[in-house]
Length: 319
Image 1 (tube, rainbow, N blue to C red):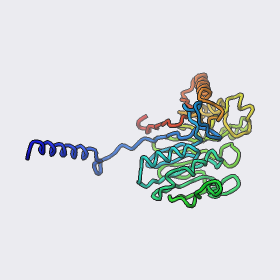
Image 2 (cartoon, rainbow, N blue to C red):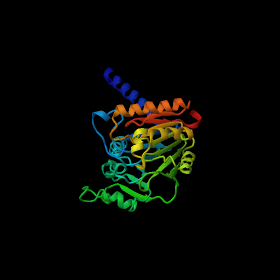
Image 3 (cartoon, one colour):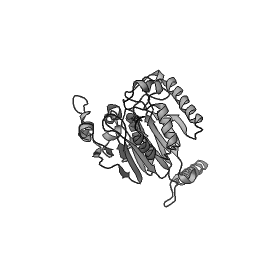
Image 4 (cartoon, one colour):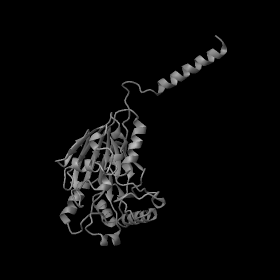
């Protein structure tokens, strides 16, 4: 054997040793991945692409939660398309088990479904959960937007295994993740969700108005949100705008911050950004929200939801 062959053999042995070192050892304990929240769509009502919405994003409602081995998607707005591309790139041909929780069936919360790439892969399973549409059953509403002449492929024709279930109770489980629902103040049948994971809880109310005259409803909302780690809530209007849109079913920034403080929420993400608000306007609203917290000497951390941003929840023992 010449020197070159010996060198090649050593190189191959070293490569095999390195590869073996990277393989998971059977039976070895692995640290569980922390709960992760990722924003794929944060805008309200209609997508707003363009140079003035680059920072916060223009896609409509869609949030991904990975927790306790589950991939849970909150709403199916236009941000769902980007999530689908990411999931297919990450998992390739591996089968996916996904759960989609719908808050309601207004277009800006379901329009991404026809463009969600995983439903065009036969190995995947998508379970869609929600409450019945405003006038029709959930399946009729979701299938309707994909019927001719609106879309070339029907929902019943996609290759993936898609199962649609209308929820009848306000508490259920997705694997080990416990979920509670509460009705939101918004036209039609609309809910918000709170997900209880091993690392903490996440509440999602993308479309919700906090009626100032409903003391009982306000107390119920505080109780529902009490101690939430991450609250994602509709804060579309400032005080002046809200006076012109009272009863529309969308939140006033000042009211949302006050609610979060009363409910002892740890982190608040302003959501459902108004389609007429550019990046500068949203940043101004964020500054105002933080001033409100400071004036109350609160510990609440406030952020404006930003497309592509990721939030990790620490486990209770790691806080």
